[in-house]
Length: 369
Image 1 (cartoon, one colour):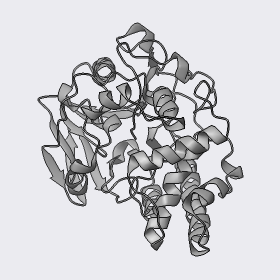
Image 2: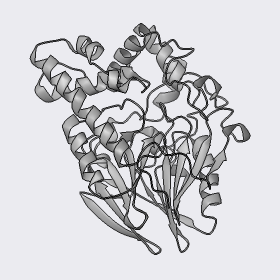
Image 3: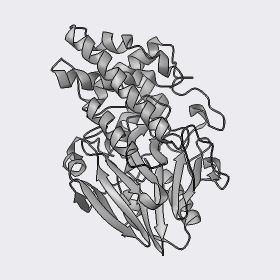
């Protein structure tokens, strides 16, 4: 069993599925990490925009899958990894931690599974970007820095063939399940990243699949908030005593990683609330938030969404529409010198760069997470 307190290295029994060998083109690999008997994490690429993680709980021929991927080619690769990890198990349940496309667009490839999420997530379906809009945005990106940003981060995804497959079962606060011999707890800890974030706790494995409650080594995207409620959710999950946390994006985490992320949220909230009270415009505040303690985290332009969430909480003017927020992010990224050829993530050992990550047939980009 993995015992992760912070900054873990991949397990010795991990398997890497290089996308160069599959339908998704060269670049972002998919790595399978065995956390405990029957409990697996699927860590996808560098964890940046659209490159999300998934999880599996398998026992006595049954399997529960935590999230699917952004596109059908990527989810087919996930199905292959699931079959390799638990060859005798059948996926009978899919849990969507939330309904951003990079965590649910592959649902249709599990037609026999019950799909579960929270009531709040299901109620917000109409606010999600429909899959059919993505290719349109690829073909006609916005002008200027926003178009360059969208194209760079999302242009390589193949959104063809996606038919949104909604949840078939919902719950309000908590749902207890049994997968073979393993107890699984579904907890609604939202609103936070979105309106009804679901986490999946496997007590016997001392593991929690967090969805986007944690962006590991990265600035988060706050589509909902309140930001302090998100920080409180981190405390609640640390209190489970779990040793391993599987983030929605990035490497496996431990309690120390989740605590640091919580501290980030509280820091940005404090600075943004002070700026709002002083009447500082949102764009000015987002540019001025001190982030030196998180200088190693890429995509610092995402702080725009966090500051906007705080402004909305305190009644200061701020947009809520994702495309408006992404336009502001793109402008800040351009100002900071994150050009389309090199913006996004700093290189990490064992991680592919964005320019090597392509799916055949894709054009230009759009939004996720």
